[in-house]
Length: 250
Ligand SMILES: C[S@@+](CC[C@H](N)C(=O)[O-])C[C@H]1O[C@@H](n2cnc3c(N)ncnc32)[C@H](O)[C@@H]1O
Image (cartoon, rainbow, N blue to C red; front, side):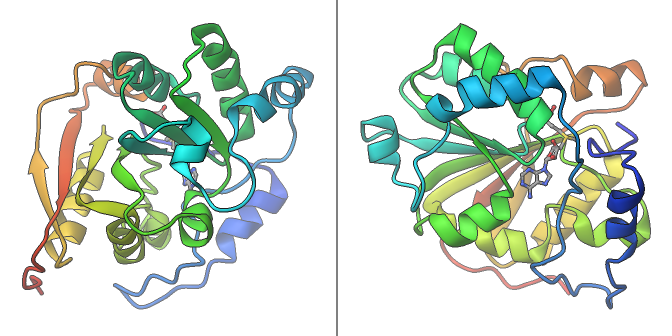
């Protein structure tokens, strides 16, 4: 993948990106977002969001998995699920676990809603919005067993690097919302992004990164297929939450 999902916006979005202030290296304010919003929805998107959205989204207020899913089970968060093929496949493959898939991009979620309605999975919920805001404001510590971050926007330009989802602020946030033995799966078709994740993890006291095999349940279509077709390597990383803080590599 060479472009961000939220790629070529028109005037207002582009000026929103340009307005991000330059900061010294390593300084990542929480308000820098890992995405830009796009404006207009098609009639099909609007119809799917209005017709299907309410049944699949979370009740307002604090996220309470036992209330939402009606049981006690491991809960997994997918960060930036796009049109949701991976989250739907995961929920189908692991009916004993609950999956919350989130994205800010409504057209992708609208398509996902249609696929989820066809699949009829009781262990899946689909929420629109910024994952960071959600985790900060509606999620209790130790809520999730795992998080999935598949093909995150790579933000290849140096001036946009502060928008990459894997950064010290978000790694701290994930420490707080995951259970003590939690983990994060990351996949990317950009070598520089895989190196970026390894480097961020190496300087964080609570995470360790490992190269792993590709999860067999994840569909190959989408960014993975495009990356392979373009001759790019797919990096699969597992970030494990460490019980004992490790000294940072400076
Ligand atoms: C490159 S796309 C990949 C989508 C999907 N994971 C896939 O593999 O097809 C990255 C997605 O992350 C979403 N995203 C980025 N930052 C986000 C955030 N803070 N909260 C929710 N979604 C986010 C974008 O809207 C975009 O849909």
